[in-house]
Amino acid sequence: MIGDRVEIVVDAGGTTRTWDVTATRAGRRVEVAHGRGVVEVSEVTRGGTPVRTARFMSSRVLALVEHPASATVRLADDESPVLPLPRPA
Image (cartoon, rainbow, N blue to C red):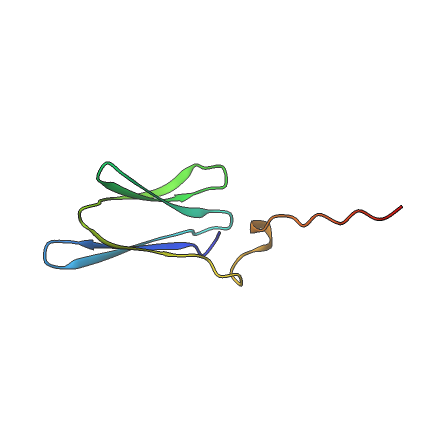
């Protein structure tokens, strides 16, 4: 959803650096994957195609904070459709 955001804090040898990966358009989301010593944060389209990707060594990551989109930021096309109730005969 637009407004999804992940904040990554990394040890940069005596100091810390912060990166933000944000879902910039409607229908996109931010996904986090980790394995084999790497943390990968990607902005992904509805179809699953990664648009932007950030990779970090997991030994250097100090904090990974996920900020989900608030309900007021979500757009109508981001929500699932509401199906009408069947009418009695």
